[in-house]
Image (cartoon, rainbow, N blue to C red; front, side, top):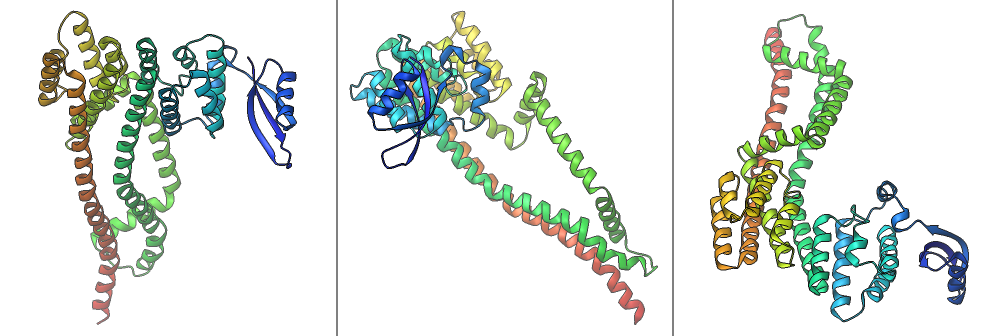
Length: 408
């Protein structure tokens, strides 16, 4: 059944926009008239397989449904299904309640395909930019086991915990980053535009200047002359480096290898990857997704290529009959205590609860490490900026003091 987007007026003359499914444009107009809605414009929305993936992605660039909207929708759908409502009726209710236009359109197209006989998980495969492989496989497992509402609840819980962790990390890093950006801009402006005007007076003195003053004058004049070139070079370099490190396989491997070897960031990044691995794998296994399929999904979302390769190798070893903990231990990338807890979970048949415990423990450690790091960053940045400002002040005042001594 086609889906139409309409612009219309209600009985009070208020302008309305929405979507409606009907057999034809005439049927859509009839439906709207029966609801006392007076049509201004009616456009057919390209649906399901007729719409290319490229078109969907292009449309999603503007107002694409984010993780928060999908999480809320998942929670609402789990509640409706848990209350005993059929899937199509639940989707109808969601369409009426959803305010996000992109997600509203997707839900209408999903309902259309489900009405035509497709399974819910099959329809989700047409929207990979909104529903990733992790989401899709859990829904598929929920449908197979007849526990779709429970799986959707687990999905919502998982997404909420991940978003809460990201929110706490961003909140902890926001103030130090803001201080660094503002301080850098102020210092750049001071050295590039203010210091040259002050130091020009020294050219008229024709006297020997202290070394630190000569250094300051050289740096400020260089920045004053070539600041635009430096800004352009830094911008182009940053874009090129980001493109190499994030869009090429070699660059990603190099980036992840360097990150893991950094003194403070390395251990913290490894703990974050292990926490993500444990929580995601536990959620997938608890929802009925097979271990090998779960490992294949998890290795693509841990956020580190080296750890992803270790998980892939672990999957190959598990396929050959080995335990999960043994190849993870051989990789040397997973902490010994995490490997030991996974081994205990395998032997006791309680792997999923043990994975959740690992995730909880390492998420707390990551939060604690970030809090400690940010509390140290603030005084360090203040000290560094104070030293730079002190260097500028001393470089300017020292020649003035010497000039006063000569006058006396």
